[in-house]
Image: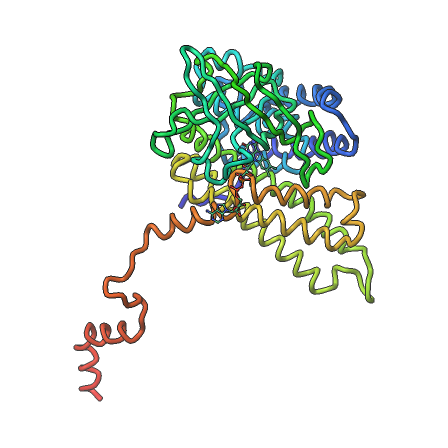
Length: 431
Ligand SMILES: Cc1cc2nc3c(=O)[nH]c(=O)nc-3n(C[C@H](O)[C@H](O)[C@H](O)COP(=O)(O)OP(=O)(O)OC[C@H]3O[C@@H](n4cnc5c(N)ncnc54)[C@H](O)[C@@H]3O)c2cc1C
Protein backbone atom coordinates (compact mmCIF):
# COMPACT_ATOMS: atom_id res chain seq x y z
CA UNK A 1 0.00 0.00 0.00
CA UNK A 2 1.45 3.35 -1.01
CA UNK A 3 -1.13 5.87 0.25
CA UNK A 4 0.93 8.22 2.37
CA UNK A 5 -0.22 11.63 3.58
CA UNK A 6 2.94 12.48 5.52
CA UNK A 7 5.58 15.07 4.69
CA UNK A 8 9.19 13.98 4.96
CA UNK A 9 10.83 15.63 8.01
CA UNK A 10 13.56 17.51 6.11
CA UNK A 11 10.97 19.15 3.85
CA UNK A 12 8.63 19.80 6.77
CA UNK A 13 11.49 21.75 8.36
CA UNK A 14 11.60 23.96 5.25
CA UNK A 15 7.85 24.52 5.44
CA UNK A 16 8.06 25.39 9.13
CA UNK A 17 10.86 27.86 8.43
CA UNK A 18 8.85 29.39 5.58
CA UNK A 19 5.72 29.76 7.71
CA UNK A 20 7.60 31.61 10.43
CA UNK A 21 9.53 33.75 7.92
CA UNK A 22 6.41 34.75 5.98
CA UNK A 23 4.48 35.62 9.13
CA UNK A 24 7.28 37.55 10.85
CA UNK A 25 9.01 39.25 7.91
CA UNK A 26 6.41 39.58 5.16
CA UNK A 27 3.00 40.04 6.76
CA UNK A 28 4.10 43.34 8.34
CA UNK A 29 5.01 44.75 4.92
CA UNK A 30 1.39 44.36 3.81
CA UNK A 31 0.33 47.14 6.13
CA UNK A 32 2.61 49.70 4.40
CA UNK A 33 1.55 51.37 1.18
CA UNK A 34 4.68 50.61 -0.86
CA UNK A 35 5.37 51.54 -4.48
CA UNK A 36 7.16 49.13 -6.83
CA UNK A 37 10.65 50.43 -6.07
CA UNK A 38 10.12 50.58 -2.32
CA UNK A 39 8.76 47.06 -2.33
CA UNK A 40 11.67 45.81 -4.42
CA UNK A 41 14.09 47.39 -1.92
CA UNK A 42 12.28 45.90 1.06
CA UNK A 43 12.27 42.53 -0.62
CA UNK A 44 15.95 42.38 -1.58
CA UNK A 45 17.33 41.30 1.84
CA UNK A 46 14.46 38.85 2.31
CA UNK A 47 15.18 37.33 -1.10
CA UNK A 48 18.79 36.85 -0.05
CA UNK A 49 17.71 34.89 3.01
CA UNK A 50 15.47 32.71 0.86
CA UNK A 51 18.38 32.05 -1.52
CA UNK A 52 20.67 31.17 1.40
CA UNK A 53 18.06 28.71 2.58
CA UNK A 54 17.99 27.14 -0.94
CA UNK A 55 14.33 27.87 -1.54
CA UNK A 56 14.58 30.44 -4.34
CA UNK A 57 12.62 29.84 -7.58
CA UNK A 58 11.84 26.32 -6.46
CA UNK A 59 9.47 25.73 -9.37
CA UNK A 60 12.35 25.19 -11.78
CA UNK A 61 14.77 22.36 -12.34
CA UNK A 62 18.20 22.43 -10.66
CA UNK A 63 20.06 23.30 -13.89
CA UNK A 64 18.06 26.54 -13.95
CA UNK A 65 18.77 27.35 -10.33
CA UNK A 66 15.61 25.80 -8.88
CA UNK A 67 15.13 22.79 -6.65
CA UNK A 68 13.36 20.37 -8.99
CA UNK A 69 10.94 19.59 -6.19
CA UNK A 70 7.95 18.46 -8.25
CA UNK A 71 4.36 19.62 -7.86
CA UNK A 72 3.46 18.11 -4.46
CA UNK A 73 6.28 19.89 -2.66
CA UNK A 74 5.73 23.04 -4.66
CA UNK A 75 2.06 22.88 -3.77
CA UNK A 76 2.86 22.67 -0.06
CA UNK A 77 5.20 25.63 -0.42
CA UNK A 78 2.55 27.67 -2.23
CA UNK A 79 0.09 26.99 0.56
CA UNK A 80 2.45 28.84 2.89
CA UNK A 81 3.19 31.58 0.36
CA UNK A 82 -0.51 32.16 -0.34
CA UNK A 83 -1.01 33.65 3.08
CA UNK A 84 0.45 36.95 1.85
CA UNK A 85 0.28 38.56 -1.60
CA UNK A 86 3.96 39.58 -1.19
CA UNK A 87 5.35 36.21 -0.13
CA UNK A 88 5.78 34.69 -3.62
CA UNK A 89 7.90 37.74 -4.53
CA UNK A 90 10.32 36.96 -1.71
CA UNK A 91 10.64 33.37 -2.95
CA UNK A 92 11.11 34.12 -6.67
CA UNK A 93 7.95 32.40 -7.80
CA UNK A 94 5.35 35.11 -8.12
CA UNK A 95 2.79 34.94 -10.89
CA UNK A 96 3.08 35.59 -13.76
CA UNK A 97 6.91 35.45 -13.69
CA UNK A 98 6.94 31.86 -12.43
CA UNK A 99 4.65 30.61 -15.21
CA UNK A 100 6.55 32.63 -17.80
CA UNK A 101 9.85 31.21 -16.63
CA UNK A 102 8.34 27.75 -17.07
CA UNK A 103 7.36 28.65 -20.64
CA UNK A 104 10.88 29.89 -21.37
CA UNK A 105 12.41 26.81 -19.76
CA UNK A 106 10.11 24.58 -21.76
CA UNK A 107 10.10 26.24 -25.16
CA UNK A 108 12.95 28.76 -25.18
CA UNK A 109 16.06 28.47 -27.32
CA UNK A 110 19.45 28.69 -25.57
CA UNK A 111 19.69 32.34 -26.72
CA UNK A 112 16.19 33.15 -25.41
CA UNK A 113 17.03 31.53 -22.08
CA UNK A 114 20.24 33.50 -21.84
CA UNK A 115 18.58 36.81 -22.62
CA UNK A 116 15.22 36.46 -20.84
CA UNK A 117 15.04 33.45 -18.56
CA UNK A 118 18.20 33.81 -16.51
CA UNK A 119 17.63 37.50 -15.67
CA UNK A 120 13.99 36.70 -14.91
CA UNK A 121 15.05 34.01 -12.46
CA UNK A 122 17.63 36.30 -10.91
CA UNK A 123 14.86 38.84 -10.27
CA UNK A 124 16.47 41.37 -12.62
CA UNK A 125 13.58 41.36 -15.12
CA UNK A 126 9.81 41.33 -14.74
CA UNK A 127 7.36 39.81 -17.19
CA UNK A 128 3.68 39.52 -18.12
CA UNK A 129 1.54 37.05 -20.02
CA UNK A 130 -0.62 38.74 -22.62
CA UNK A 131 -3.38 36.59 -24.04
CA UNK A 132 -6.85 37.84 -23.07
CA UNK A 133 -8.50 40.41 -25.33
CA UNK A 134 -11.36 42.80 -24.62
CA UNK A 135 -13.15 41.93 -27.86
CA UNK A 136 -12.94 38.12 -27.95
CA UNK A 137 -13.91 35.52 -25.33
CA UNK A 138 -10.90 34.69 -23.15
CA UNK A 139 -12.62 31.47 -22.12
CA UNK A 140 -12.34 30.31 -25.74
CA UNK A 141 -8.86 31.44 -26.82
CA UNK A 142 -9.26 29.78 -30.22
CA UNK A 143 -11.19 33.00 -31.04
CA UNK A 144 -8.13 35.23 -30.49
CA UNK A 145 -8.01 38.22 -32.84
CA UNK A 146 -4.47 39.53 -32.33
CA UNK A 147 -2.40 38.73 -35.44
CA UNK A 148 1.30 38.09 -35.94
CA UNK A 149 2.28 38.29 -39.61
CA UNK A 150 5.61 37.01 -40.78
CA UNK A 151 7.51 39.56 -42.89
CA UNK A 152 11.02 38.44 -43.82
CA UNK A 153 12.91 37.81 -40.60
CA UNK A 154 10.39 39.69 -38.51
CA UNK A 155 6.88 39.24 -37.15
CA UNK A 156 4.46 42.17 -37.06
CA UNK A 157 1.99 41.98 -34.17
CA UNK A 158 -1.25 43.93 -34.12
CA UNK A 159 -4.19 43.72 -31.76
CA UNK A 160 -5.52 44.72 -28.38
CA UNK A 161 -5.11 42.83 -25.12
CA UNK A 162 -6.20 43.47 -21.59
CA UNK A 163 -5.80 41.97 -18.13
CA UNK A 164 -2.12 41.34 -18.83
CA UNK A 165 -1.19 41.16 -15.15
CA UNK A 166 1.95 43.12 -14.17
CA UNK A 167 2.47 44.36 -17.76
CA UNK A 168 2.73 47.98 -16.62
CA UNK A 169 5.84 47.11 -14.57
CA UNK A 170 7.18 44.41 -16.90
CA UNK A 171 10.33 44.41 -19.02
CA UNK A 172 8.96 41.90 -21.50
CA UNK A 173 5.66 40.33 -22.45
CA UNK A 174 4.83 36.86 -23.66
CA UNK A 175 2.17 37.49 -26.26
CA UNK A 176 -0.20 34.97 -27.77
CA UNK A 177 -1.13 35.86 -31.36
CA UNK A 178 -2.64 34.14 -34.38
CA UNK A 179 -0.06 33.16 -36.98
CA UNK A 180 -2.30 31.04 -39.22
CA UNK A 181 -6.05 31.70 -39.02
CA UNK A 182 -6.72 28.82 -41.44
CA UNK A 183 -4.93 26.17 -39.38
CA UNK A 184 -6.78 23.74 -37.12
CA UNK A 185 -8.31 25.50 -34.11
CA UNK A 186 -5.56 24.65 -31.64
CA UNK A 187 -2.73 25.28 -34.10
CA UNK A 188 -3.63 28.83 -35.10
CA UNK A 189 -1.73 30.73 -32.43
CA UNK A 190 1.90 31.14 -31.41
CA UNK A 191 3.74 32.73 -28.50
CA UNK A 192 6.22 35.57 -28.82
CA UNK A 193 8.57 37.41 -26.54
CA UNK A 194 8.02 41.14 -26.88
CA UNK A 195 10.27 43.70 -25.21
CA UNK A 196 8.02 46.43 -23.73
CA UNK A 197 10.25 49.08 -25.30
CA UNK A 198 9.54 47.87 -28.83
CA UNK A 199 7.94 50.65 -30.90
CA UNK A 200 4.18 50.11 -31.17
CA UNK A 201 3.74 48.55 -27.70
CA UNK A 202 1.31 50.92 -26.02
CA UNK A 203 0.56 50.00 -22.43
CA UNK A 204 -2.51 52.14 -21.96
CA UNK A 205 -3.52 51.69 -18.33
CA UNK A 206 -3.96 49.32 -15.44
CA UNK A 207 -7.65 48.54 -15.66
CA UNK A 208 -9.55 49.58 -12.53
CA UNK A 209 -10.92 46.38 -10.98
CA UNK A 210 -12.70 45.09 -7.89
CA UNK A 211 -9.26 44.31 -6.49
CA UNK A 212 -7.75 47.71 -7.32
CA UNK A 213 -10.74 50.03 -7.81
CA UNK A 214 -8.58 53.05 -8.59
CA UNK A 215 -6.70 51.52 -11.50
CA UNK A 216 -3.76 53.73 -12.37
CA UNK A 217 -0.50 52.58 -13.85
CA UNK A 218 2.60 50.71 -12.76
CA UNK A 219 1.84 48.55 -9.76
CA UNK A 220 2.35 44.95 -8.76
CA UNK A 221 -0.86 43.11 -9.47
CA UNK A 222 -2.13 45.69 -11.98
CA UNK A 223 -3.97 44.31 -15.01
CA UNK A 224 -2.91 46.26 -18.07
CA UNK A 225 -4.67 47.08 -21.30
CA UNK A 226 -2.23 47.03 -24.22
CA UNK A 227 -2.47 48.12 -27.83
CA UNK A 228 -0.04 46.31 -30.13
CA UNK A 229 0.22 48.72 -33.02
CA UNK A 230 2.21 46.98 -35.79
CA UNK A 231 4.87 45.85 -33.35
CA UNK A 232 7.90 44.51 -35.25
CA UNK A 233 9.91 41.86 -33.48
CA UNK A 234 12.71 39.58 -34.71
CA UNK A 235 11.45 36.18 -35.88
CA UNK A 236 13.87 34.71 -33.34
CA UNK A 237 11.46 35.90 -30.61
CA UNK A 238 9.00 33.17 -31.55
CA UNK A 239 8.70 30.71 -28.66
CA UNK A 240 8.71 27.09 -29.71
CA UNK A 241 7.27 26.21 -33.10
CA UNK A 242 4.84 28.34 -35.06
CA UNK A 243 1.33 27.15 -34.12
CA UNK A 244 2.46 25.67 -30.79
CA UNK A 245 0.95 28.45 -28.66
CA UNK A 246 -1.88 26.37 -27.19
CA UNK A 247 0.33 23.40 -26.53
CA UNK A 248 2.77 25.55 -24.57
CA UNK A 249 -0.07 27.36 -22.77
CA UNK A 250 -1.54 24.05 -21.68
CA UNK A 251 1.75 22.89 -20.24
CA UNK A 252 2.15 26.17 -18.37
CA UNK A 253 -1.38 26.33 -17.01
CA UNK A 254 -1.47 22.91 -15.33
CA UNK A 255 1.18 23.54 -12.67
CA UNK A 256 0.05 27.17 -12.41
CA UNK A 257 -3.46 26.08 -11.41
CA UNK A 258 -2.11 23.78 -8.72
CA UNK A 259 -0.10 26.68 -7.32
CA UNK A 260 -3.13 29.01 -7.47
CA UNK A 261 -5.27 26.50 -5.60
CA UNK A 262 -2.66 25.97 -2.90
CA UNK A 263 -2.14 29.72 -2.50
CA UNK A 264 -5.91 30.13 -2.12
CA UNK A 265 -5.74 27.65 0.72
CA UNK A 266 -3.15 29.87 2.37
CA UNK A 267 -5.58 32.80 2.07
CA UNK A 268 -8.48 30.61 3.28
CA UNK A 269 -6.54 29.46 6.34
CA UNK A 270 -5.75 33.04 7.30
CA UNK A 271 -9.41 34.03 6.93
CA UNK A 272 -10.44 30.90 8.83
CA UNK A 273 -8.12 31.80 11.72
CA UNK A 274 -9.79 35.22 11.88
CA UNK A 275 -13.23 33.58 11.81
CA UNK A 276 -12.36 31.29 14.71
CA UNK A 277 -10.66 34.02 16.73
CA UNK A 278 -13.67 36.31 16.42
CA UNK A 279 -15.99 33.50 17.47
CA UNK A 280 -14.12 33.11 20.76
CA UNK A 281 -14.65 36.65 22.05
CA UNK A 282 -17.55 38.45 20.34
CA UNK A 283 -20.66 38.32 22.50
CA UNK A 284 -24.21 38.73 21.23
CA UNK A 285 -27.59 37.55 22.47
CA UNK A 286 -26.30 36.01 25.67
CA UNK A 287 -23.24 34.09 24.49
CA UNK A 288 -20.04 34.33 22.49
CA UNK A 289 -20.51 33.69 18.78
CA UNK A 290 -18.67 30.37 19.15
CA UNK A 291 -21.75 29.04 20.91
CA UNK A 292 -24.15 29.87 18.07
CA UNK A 293 -24.89 26.87 15.94
CA UNK A 294 -24.72 28.85 12.72
CA UNK A 295 -21.18 29.96 13.53
CA UNK A 296 -20.24 26.42 14.51
CA UNK A 297 -21.59 25.28 11.13
CA UNK A 298 -19.49 27.90 9.37
CA UNK A 299 -16.40 26.65 11.16
CA UNK A 300 -17.13 23.00 10.41
CA UNK A 301 -18.14 23.63 6.80
CA UNK A 302 -15.04 25.76 6.19
CA UNK A 303 -12.76 23.14 7.72
CA UNK A 304 -14.37 20.43 5.58
CA UNK A 305 -14.14 22.46 2.38
CA UNK A 306 -10.51 23.38 2.99
CA UNK A 307 -9.58 19.80 3.81
CA UNK A 308 -11.32 18.57 0.66
CA UNK A 309 -9.73 21.26 -1.53
CA UNK A 310 -6.31 20.55 -0.04
CA UNK A 311 -6.46 16.81 -0.58
CA UNK A 312 -7.87 17.21 -4.08
CA UNK A 313 -5.15 19.67 -5.00
CA UNK A 314 -2.32 17.60 -3.58
CA UNK A 315 -3.76 14.58 -5.36
CA UNK A 316 -3.76 16.51 -8.66
CA UNK A 317 -0.14 17.50 -7.94
CA UNK A 318 0.79 13.89 -7.20
CA UNK A 319 -0.87 12.73 -10.39
CA UNK A 320 1.04 15.35 -12.35
CA UNK A 321 4.30 14.25 -10.74
CA UNK A 322 3.69 10.56 -11.31
CA UNK A 323 1.79 10.46 -14.62
CA UNK A 324 2.44 13.82 -16.28
CA UNK A 325 0.47 17.01 -16.92
CA UNK A 326 -1.84 15.51 -19.50
CA UNK A 327 -3.00 12.68 -17.23
CA UNK A 328 -3.92 15.20 -14.52
CA UNK A 329 -6.18 17.39 -16.68
CA UNK A 330 -9.43 16.21 -15.12
CA UNK A 331 -8.10 16.63 -11.57
CA UNK A 332 -6.81 20.10 -12.36
CA UNK A 333 -10.14 21.22 -13.82
CA UNK A 334 -11.85 19.88 -10.66
CA UNK A 335 -9.67 21.81 -8.24
CA UNK A 336 -9.77 25.04 -10.23
CA UNK A 337 -13.48 25.64 -9.65
CA UNK A 338 -13.74 23.76 -6.34
CA UNK A 339 -10.77 25.61 -4.84
CA UNK A 340 -12.02 29.01 -6.00
CA UNK A 341 -15.44 28.32 -4.42
CA UNK A 342 -13.80 27.16 -1.18
CA UNK A 343 -11.76 30.36 -1.01
CA UNK A 344 -14.83 32.47 -1.66
CA UNK A 345 -16.98 30.70 0.95
CA UNK A 346 -14.41 30.73 3.74
CA UNK A 347 -13.55 34.41 3.24
CA UNK A 348 -17.25 35.28 3.00
CA UNK A 349 -18.04 33.57 6.33
CA UNK A 350 -15.04 35.18 8.03
CA UNK A 351 -16.15 38.57 6.77
CA UNK A 352 -19.73 37.96 7.91
CA UNK A 353 -18.75 36.93 11.43
CA UNK A 354 -16.87 40.22 11.82
CA UNK A 355 -19.90 42.33 10.88
CA UNK A 356 -19.03 45.91 9.95
CA UNK A 357 -15.41 45.36 11.03
CA UNK A 358 -15.14 42.65 8.35
CA UNK A 359 -16.52 45.01 5.73
CA UNK A 360 -14.03 47.71 6.73
CA UNK A 361 -10.44 48.07 5.59
CA UNK A 362 -9.32 47.72 9.23
CA UNK A 363 -9.10 43.98 8.47
CA UNK A 364 -7.72 42.31 5.35
CA UNK A 365 -10.95 40.37 4.81
CA UNK A 366 -12.61 42.78 2.39
CA UNK A 367 -9.46 42.73 0.22
CA UNK A 368 -9.41 38.92 0.39
CA UNK A 369 -13.06 38.90 -0.66
CA UNK A 370 -12.33 41.01 -3.73
CA UNK A 371 -9.31 38.84 -4.53
CA UNK A 372 -11.42 35.70 -4.16
CA UNK A 373 -13.93 36.87 -6.73
CA UNK A 374 -11.26 37.06 -9.43
CA UNK A 375 -10.25 33.45 -8.73
CA UNK A 376 -13.48 32.25 -10.30
CA UNK A 377 -12.51 33.93 -13.59
CA UNK A 378 -8.79 33.86 -14.29
CA UNK A 379 -7.11 30.77 -15.72
CA UNK A 380 -10.52 29.78 -17.00
CA UNK A 381 -13.94 30.62 -15.54
CA UNK A 382 -15.68 28.05 -13.30
CA UNK A 383 -18.16 27.12 -16.00
CA UNK A 384 -15.45 26.11 -18.46
CA UNK A 385 -13.72 23.86 -15.91
CA UNK A 386 -17.03 22.30 -14.89
CA UNK A 387 -17.72 21.66 -18.57
CA UNK A 388 -14.30 19.99 -18.97
CA UNK A 389 -14.87 17.80 -15.92
CA UNK A 390 -18.31 16.76 -17.15
CA UNK A 391 -16.89 15.95 -20.59
CA UNK A 392 -14.11 13.83 -19.11
CA UNK A 393 -16.59 11.95 -16.98
CA UNK A 394 -19.24 11.53 -19.67
CA UNK A 395 -16.57 10.17 -22.01
CA UNK A 396 -16.69 6.89 -20.10
CA UNK A 397 -20.48 6.53 -20.27
CA UNK A 398 -22.71 5.29 -23.08
CA UNK A 399 -26.47 5.32 -23.53
CA UNK A 400 -28.04 1.93 -22.71
CA UNK A 401 -28.43 -0.13 -25.85
CA UNK A 402 -32.15 -0.69 -25.40
CA UNK A 403 -32.93 2.77 -24.02
CA UNK A 404 -33.77 1.33 -20.58
CA UNK A 405 -31.70 2.69 -17.65
CA UNK A 406 -29.11 0.13 -16.48
CA UNK A 407 -30.46 0.27 -12.94
CA UNK A 408 -34.16 -0.13 -13.90
CA UNK A 409 -35.39 -2.37 -11.10
CA UNK A 410 -38.19 -4.29 -12.91
CA UNK A 411 -35.79 -5.11 -15.76
CA UNK A 412 -33.05 -6.17 -13.32
CA UNK A 413 -35.57 -8.21 -11.33
CA UNK A 414 -36.65 -10.11 -14.46
CA UNK A 415 -32.99 -10.77 -15.32
CA UNK A 416 -32.22 -11.90 -11.75
CA UNK A 417 -35.22 -14.26 -11.77
CA UNK A 418 -33.92 -15.81 -14.94
CA UNK A 419 -30.31 -15.99 -13.71
CA UNK A 420 -31.19 -17.57 -10.38
CA UNK A 421 -34.19 -19.57 -11.60
CA UNK A 422 -32.68 -22.94 -10.59
CA UNK A 423 -31.98 -21.72 -7.04
CA UNK A 424 -35.37 -20.09 -6.68
CA UNK A 425 -37.02 -23.26 -7.98
CA UNK A 426 -35.10 -25.33 -5.40
CA UNK A 427 -36.18 -23.06 -2.54
CA UNK A 428 -39.76 -23.25 -3.70
CA UNK A 429 -39.48 -27.07 -3.96
CA UNK A 430 -38.14 -27.36 -0.37
CA UNK A 431 -41.02 -25.27 0.87
C1 LIG B 1 -7.56 38.99 -11.70
C2 LIG B 1 -7.38 38.54 -13.13
C3 LIG B 1 -6.10 38.37 -13.65
C4 LIG B 1 -5.91 37.98 -14.98
N1 LIG B 1 -4.64 37.88 -15.49
C5 LIG B 1 -4.47 37.60 -16.80
C6 LIG B 1 -3.16 37.59 -17.39
O1 LIG B 1 -2.15 37.81 -16.71
N2 LIG B 1 -3.05 37.38 -18.74
C7 LIG B 1 -4.13 37.14 -19.53
O2 LIG B 1 -3.97 36.93 -20.72
N3 LIG B 1 -5.40 37.13 -18.99
C8 LIG B 1 -5.60 37.36 -17.67
N4 LIG B 1 -6.88 37.41 -17.12
C9 LIG B 1 -8.02 37.19 -17.99
C10 LIG B 1 -8.74 35.88 -17.74
O3 LIG B 1 -7.93 34.79 -18.10
C11 LIG B 1 -10.07 35.93 -18.50
O4 LIG B 1 -10.88 36.90 -17.85
C12 LIG B 1 -10.80 34.60 -18.56
O5 LIG B 1 -10.12 33.69 -19.38
C13 LIG B 1 -12.23 34.78 -19.10
O6 LIG B 1 -12.22 35.44 -20.33
P1 LIG B 1 -13.17 36.72 -20.55
O7 LIG B 1 -12.92 37.69 -19.46
O8 LIG B 1 -12.97 37.20 -21.95
O9 LIG B 1 -14.65 36.19 -20.36
P2 LIG B 1 -15.54 35.44 -21.47
O10 LIG B 1 -14.74 34.46 -22.21
O11 LIG B 1 -16.28 36.48 -22.23
O12 LIG B 1 -16.55 34.65 -20.53
C14 LIG B 1 -17.56 35.33 -19.78
C15 LIG B 1 -18.38 34.33 -19.02
O13 LIG B 1 -19.05 33.47 -19.93
C16 LIG B 1 -19.34 32.26 -19.30
N5 LIG B 1 -18.86 31.14 -20.12
C17 LIG B 1 -17.80 31.11 -20.94
N6 LIG B 1 -17.66 29.88 -21.49
C18 LIG B 1 -18.67 29.14 -21.00
C19 LIG B 1 -19.09 27.79 -21.17
N7 LIG B 1 -18.41 26.97 -21.97
N8 LIG B 1 -20.17 27.36 -20.48
C20 LIG B 1 -20.85 28.19 -19.65
N9 LIG B 1 -20.51 29.47 -19.45
C21 LIG B 1 -19.44 29.93 -20.11
C22 LIG B 1 -18.61 32.27 -17.95
O14 LIG B 1 -19.51 32.58 -16.92
C23 LIG B 1 -17.60 33.37 -18.11
O15 LIG B 1 -17.22 33.97 -16.88
C24 LIG B 1 -7.06 37.77 -15.80
C25 LIG B 1 -8.35 37.93 -15.26
C26 LIG B 1 -8.52 38.32 -13.96
C27 LIG B 1 -9.93 38.50 -13.42
